[in-house]
Amino acid sequence: MNTITLLGIALALAMDAFAVAAAVAASLPRLTRRHVFRLSWHFGLFQFLMPVIGWFLGAGLLGMLRNAAHLVAGGLLFFLGLRMLWESRRPDTRSRHFDPTRGWSLVGLSIATSLDALAVGVSLALVQVTIIKAALVIGAVAAALTFIGTRVGRTAGAYCGQWAERFGGAVLIAIAGNILFAH
Image 1 (cartoon, rainbow, N blue to C red):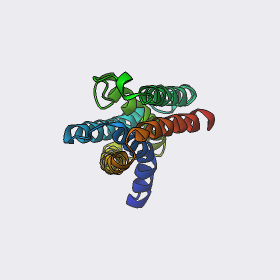
Image 2 (spheres, rainbow, N blue to C red):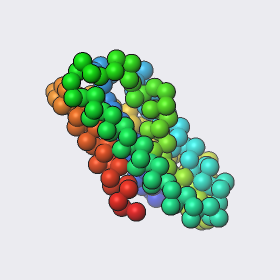
Image 3 (cartoon, rainbow, N blue to C red):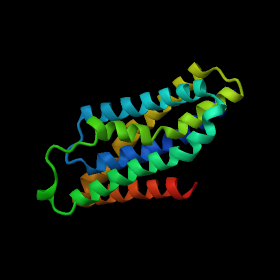
Image 4 (cartoon, rainbow, N blue to C red):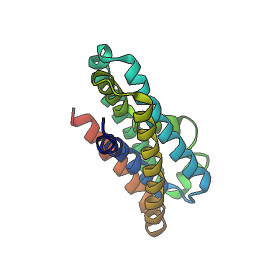
């Protein structure tokens, strides 16, 4: 597989990570280096791991994965979007301890933004692509676009205040709807 094709695949896979990172960053009252690192690292790591897993699973499981992957990804993003909308109602109702860049929220977002890469890994196995190089490129592009997404989201959050969290929640719900209804 040539480099241009691989970069195109990596960019396409990283678009969800970019959008989710921007929405999360916009919703945070204060974006720190730790937030940016956690999002970039985990999104990049999961985007690296999922094609490798898909490559090893092979084509036999693609039918089962294809039927459930969009439900899992869409459901996770929808749930987090609803939570962000709910908590944006009034600042005093927001959980002081809720940070989508930590714990199970981060794992859920990481999985949701990388499930497409699982199917891509299966496809790469079918065309006999060496998976390590492809997975490294996919993971690095996802980490870079996640970093850029946090910067875009931080800027939007600084100008929009409480509305940024509502917008971020709405964006996550829209992405979830697109994932759920596009299949």
